[in-house]
Length: 329
View 1 (cartoon, rainbow, N blue to C red):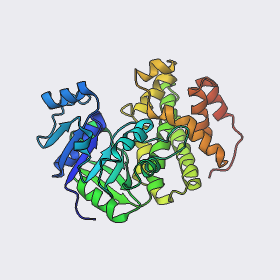
View 2: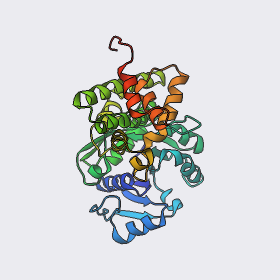
View 3: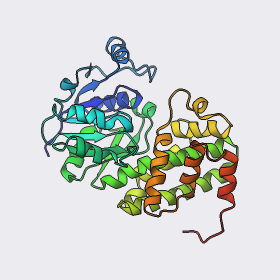
View 4: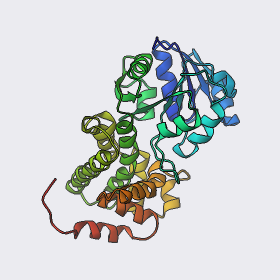
């Protein structure tokens, strides 16, 4: 695949704005599409993200509400919530040229269908090339040009390499991979485990408990990944262990901060502060998929039970601590 000179970013929230900034710094022609009229107007008139105060848009970033205009780009980054990705791609499908890379930048699994993000793209836009971008990255860091490394995966190796090259801004370093399933699986699973880590922190159970939870959570991620066809080296890489480590260690992670609030005894709606973390939506789907293949995921199961109101936080912690002793795997 030849070099990609024009990039469209769909979604003008914090992560979408950060990726638009990155693509512009990498020298690409960038179109930032935003569905919400108020946010689009703010971006156009003030050239500043209201989700990232103080971050001014690069001069070359063009903001639009016209989906057809964005669809003319050589590659599109889909920075929309996992549960609305199908709707957005369905709208895009008649507008894009064949073989256009559509890069999912959301971390989740679709409710009901159990589809991963690239599977949704393949179904809703069969002429496109599905890809995924994931890894340990916070929007505020990326938007400000702080050093960050991620993974971009596509089954087409040339496409994955071209996308990585197109997004390489120096401080933002993408690695490329053909293990699409491994990259998207790590991103989805770590969201649920980050909620568990936040609960541990919010309950003030100590650094030892947090380290144990993160480590055993990684074991669950690997089990799940193996069952669904991920490569072991991907799970030990940026989109697996890297992303998990980051999101289980700081309140900058929305899932971690949500878990912290639950650990402090807040209800789900209060803990969410008006916007639920993606792990809340992923937990029940992850549990269903694990049960379908007989995968033992006690931490993820406990998180799903807490979110569903079937277990209190204390009961969930007690249940994990009183599990039968076993050899470490």
